[in-house]
Length: 121
Length: 399
Image (cartoon, rainbow over all chains, first blue to last red):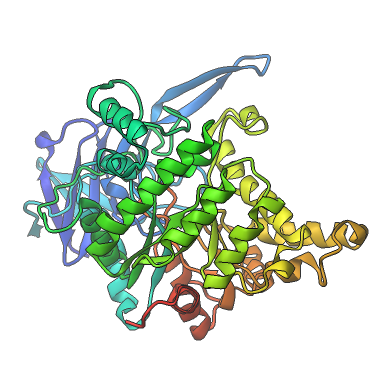
């Protein structure tokens, strides 16, 4: 196990990301609601550069009590990273695919220590 | 502790270079040693509307050409001159989630060839391809144009542009000439005039249209193609205003069905009216409908044919047996049900009839790894699908 220094915690805005490369291994590090998450830049679908994609809130459809649709809205809770190759979406908090829970990204632990952000690989 | 400095990888947007978008595909190509394989991509695209100001210069009718020039120079707020289609209903990029489908504004320094040649070369380099067959994009809707004569004029202008501007740029880039199928005589004239174009490997009917392929008025066209040994391809597309498709409120539903429905209809007419018996040497290729529809239609037609043989008297064998002799491109290959996919490969004789295609740069593109990584293919079958079937069919040189 080794660790990679990603940056200073104070330099990360909310929903910020850093893309790091070490010996050919590409990792995306994201800040969501103050916490940090890291994933390999490799989509579970076709191997696309998922961490280089858009970060958008999950889309939800809201139903009324009588089951009629009220239309679409962005989730206030779930934030997705979306692979720019084909649009596969993953929840940034656990790396699990939005459409198929059996698909997920490779996750790395992140440590914040004395103001520094580190990924354990 | 290792410190990481400036990252060479960045978020991807419409300005990102093709080679950066596809850097992982290049890594797959290197790891799988694609240089040891002949790989032919039989269906990719360029966006011809970015060059529409050039293409309209090839319109032969001087009045229409002048109107097109004036429109392109002065008109604001409209799509390119003369094109029909769905205007703003182009949701393929899923709200910007798939940037390369929305636009490709990357820097191109090269001036010696057309920009689209450079973009195509970058994709070939990234995917590890030997040949890339390019098709237009919005022109896939031209078969729904209310003016048949406009399909003739614009299709012909595009063919001339291909011949003079795009295809001479790189001998690895190939194309199928556009057939203005709504005018049978003009379609025949297209075959007569464009069969010898360097870089052309056949002719294409864009499938989103409402002309029955078995009508007597097309027999001279098919005879001309057969006589010249030129393949005929049916490139799928969608038409959301189609009365059935207009029931679908989500793009995903419309796209999933429409890209298959058009070829289901044309294939059904093609087989039941005995076109394979009438033109046994004419090779047909069915593009961009995926593969799952083929076993469905084989089963469906065989089942009904045996009860209603008198309605298809030209057939001398089962519909599925004719379909098994035709060619299909692979993309968008439905890979989420592996057992069904394996059976599909068996039913369509994929090892000799299937042609790899990427559909790059569209949103549902397939890199060559979709074929390379299949666990049930023989080594020769893999080589055939990736390139050898296409090389034989399209008469390409070995590289």
